[in-house]
Image (tube, rainbow, N blue to C red):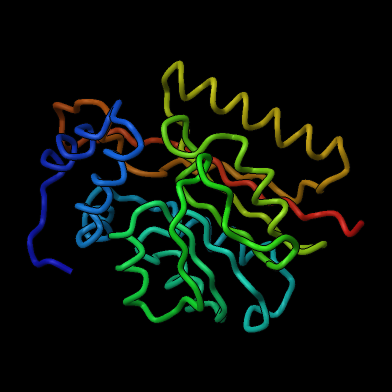
Length: 234
């Protein structure tokens, strides 16, 4: 990782520079960010990986060392590094940024790493293969469409767990995404595809770098939501 570090104000400018760009430009943005992604995310107090991994572990009864994990939108491999600390060992990762996948490869934790643009390309995962399917932070209106959730479901084994987290952006598009996503989660439950295990709110998902803050002592935080579902056995 680079020794250079960005201030929070620098990161506001940097992160917002990707707003409204097309898919190819967004992946170029993440390629350019990959080397300092975790360092910068810590500066932004991005806690979703830690909180989501803890959320899964607190509500999971299997033996972590035997579990096959699909890490969707795996980025630099941060989630896998946290899961390894809790005994998980077997990971396959998918991301749309080759730069991020290169960083994930350096962890040495993944059996396979696959490049795919979620929502554009099919999820490159066999059906019914994984005990746990994780997606942390990517479920947003300008990142991963709600339609991908059914692909996450398909990748899980019968009885497997699908663990998802997203931030609650206080905008019209953010609110529309939340409504659409939660409608789909409920519909899939009504269809008998899975059962709801638990949902939990996150008060401090990350510092809100999407809006200006003139008072550095009173930074505003984005909230978030974590969801855990269990795929039906039949």
